[in-house]
Length: 298
Image 1 (cartoon, rainbow, N blue to C red):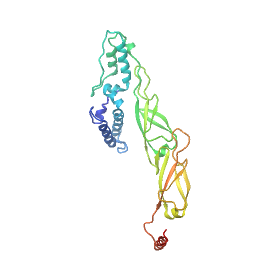
Image 2 (cartoon, helix red, strand yellow; image 1 turned 120 degrees about the horizontal axis):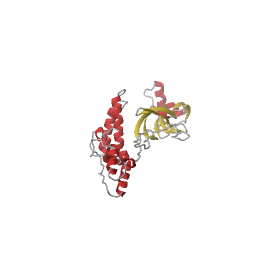
Image 3 (spheres, rainbow, N blue to C red; image 1 turned 45 degrees about the horizontal axis):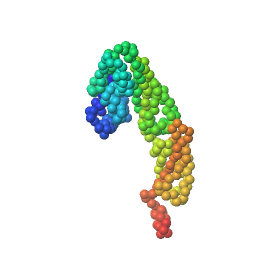
Image 4 (cartoon, rainbow, N blue to C red; image 1 turned 135 degrees about the vertical axis):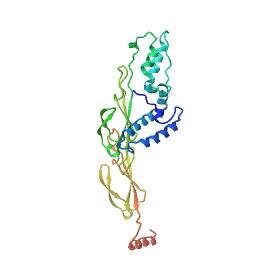
């Protein structure tokens, strides 16, 4: 695997703080986001590297491993285990400490040989199997697309992968596709593929979990006298009865008319907030009526 200097990708050095990393990521992600650079494969590739760098460097544990082992950071636990095993063997050989210094590519096999080369073990005995690297991908969808379970074909590292996207998946949620990561070392198992979802809200509703929210205007006369209105929901039109004397900000709950529950049966609720529409210009007759109401203290 080619080495990628994550610090260089974000334009930072190894002394960067968490705040520096977050700030650099936001700035570069906005600049190279595919939505702002349509049909620009170079920008798309940079965006992927920026996300990959941020994922590693923003996680203290992953960053610690990356700082020590470079491109082989995902094998840090195996390295530590190998060193521990080497220390437990009879003397007769030596090993050098493996620490990533940054800016150059280091090879796992060279490190492994430096651990076991002088110990009396054969090279075949020393070739332990190691799990492949995990891959990370982002999938952008509209909110209206995830109101139902559906299948989607993704292309990851040149391979087409058919996945099922459950209804109700959240923005920023990550799912794991087992065995679709990098090839293992020395015949070890493949890594996994982690897909993070970026959900764009293309509906007139605000979403919070499985619940939906919307503020709608109603005629002032309907708010005062009551009546019926027709409302468009995600699952079709419904009729609502508005009570006489409905106040501005009054909210009603439509049970089961919200968003699908993730990997569960059922739906959340839809909350509708009323906003009576105040007329901007009154006719002479309307003005007369309102003055009469005012005189009556209404």
